[in-house]
Image 1 (cartoon, rainbow, N blue to C red):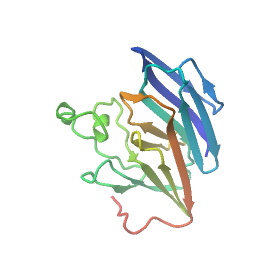
Image 2 (image 1 turned 30 degrees about the vertical axis):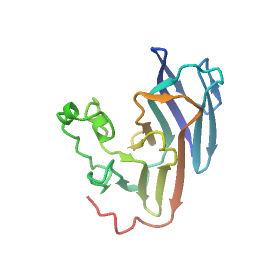
Image 3 (image 1 turned 135 degrees about the horizontal axis):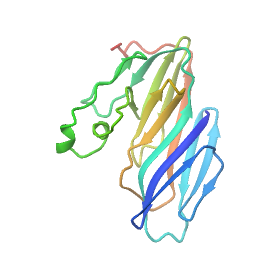
Image 4 (image 1 turned 90 degrees about the vertical axis):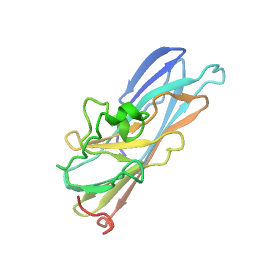
Length: 198
């Protein structure tokens, strides 16, 4: 799997910080260390805190960007946030309709509702995993680290990337934490018939 970039916005003692990395070389600052494991079918990113930590780090945003070639892309299976939302098969030009912004007035900002306040609503997105159908195979990317928060996969065919956002606003980190564990599987088959086209 090809790593493209990592963005983290966090705060400590009411001071805001941002870091953006364009390589997977181990990174360290005064607050934590990041370690990477990059393999053909997996990316693992651990955030390691020092033993002397007294106050938690608060993660407000985290985004991992990986490469994906959309040359022969035909369909995307998008897994929605909860059982009351509709998972569906999407063609490249299809869009998931935005949720009404009025809902954000009455609900906590999480899951699909986070996107109701974004300026640029992603045309397609999928929670926990995403499956992409190509001519001769289907490729699935799945998060194996959703114990601390939820992962949202956003395909970007123009840039040949997939952005993986963590739903982390206000997440307190007290201990060493696995931020990302993305697993990739290739199957030489088409999607199951249980996935109906939109």
